[in-house]
Image (cartoon, helix red, strand yellow):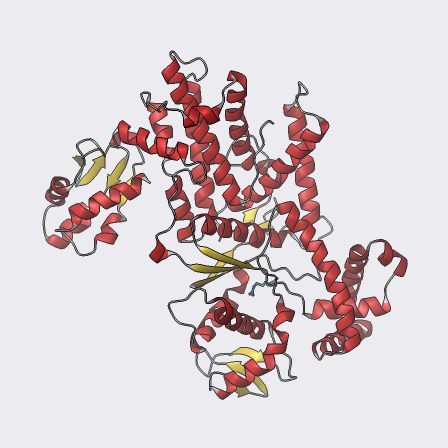
Length: 582
Ligand code: ARG
């Protein structure tokens, strides 16, 4: 909000000096050190070079042309030509006032109409025949946070869960269902039994010797029969799929995630033969050794295969069909794929193929990639027996451990048993989501329950605690914030800690914008962490309920209110709930 205002004033001042105003405006940033003002504008150095003038002179020229009225104090030129800016307190108060009354958006503006886009977010997308494991949490929570932020920012978002519901794992279950099913167990708990037979068959196939080969072949036969529409296999597949979907839905509801569409791989299957024929006809795909591929890196490099020698289609063929479908039916301006970095080559090929097929360069195709979840031994996160860790168990354990935190905090038994469990649920799930989002998404991240549930540091627990603490002030002081907010009391900033908190609160919109610029939710988590820290410094230095006079007390209560709501909104955008007491 503030930065926006600064930029528009600077744009006018820069007009006579450069045609590339945009890149100069990028050089206005919050100051690292408050002694150098609140913001620093550093464009005088590169501009000076370009104009052949001493940067300090250029800085002077910029300042002379800058309309500072109602914005900041007289700017200072420092060092080689930095422009230091200190915002006027009245402006800070005015802007805070606007945020206070703007209950829904807290002053965050909606994207300009000409920048509004229709964006497809392809995320989560597990292979549903297998149990969802720790690897899926990243796509699910990153994708969910992005789609929430994009919507909040005013884009037209379509979410699509491109589940794997058609591959060999289904052939395995079909084979297992026919040959290894424990009917009684299935009747009692179909999902568990299906999981068991999947693992059993997988184990058989992965073994060696004759049995492995025979089962492997049988599985491929079942899969092929399914793909060719064999009625019995299709019926069995439907039955199995239904159970698989109800299983993932349970996890989604625990994570508070939902999708506009769930068009899995099977949905595109009927379209594949024609797509390959058309690509051949258009000269985009070529035959090579009986298989069909798209040669993207020249004839000498391996092509992106779209039909195997035996006639089977591939993951990539389905993704080509999916892009075509999305372009035709949704006409998006962007498609984001929130998928593990290990699929980088696949997406590189897919995007190149899409361009050949006529998807305009103006349509953004982005692989929002992320790294691996590691255990505390820095190796891919596995259970002791070496299995991948199931997502459900992870959620259970996070909630259990959160309960221990809640109970130990609640030594004076303020919470009922139900409240304790509900609080633990929110804290446990929140911790899990936040721990993931607060990492730079491209790096691998080390999973640790202790770290994610820490009451101090950059965790959801710390943020939820900060929120609950603010709320408890209102309860303790018997303050009705609603009336306070709507009344005509104002925020006045006299103490440096108040001012620092105010400045931070006014950066909310930038934090969201920054997160969306390169699809990095960790920009928002760092921001929330900064807010919580500024709040804590403020709270230590400035008495609120016991402030020296009524006006100061009200002003500080309003700051508290805005802090609480900024944290709550920020967490909500990340898919995390708050708690009133903990
Ligand atoms: N099901 C795939 C997997 O688990 C991810 C799908 C991602 N989306 C896509 N359009 N390819 O690896």
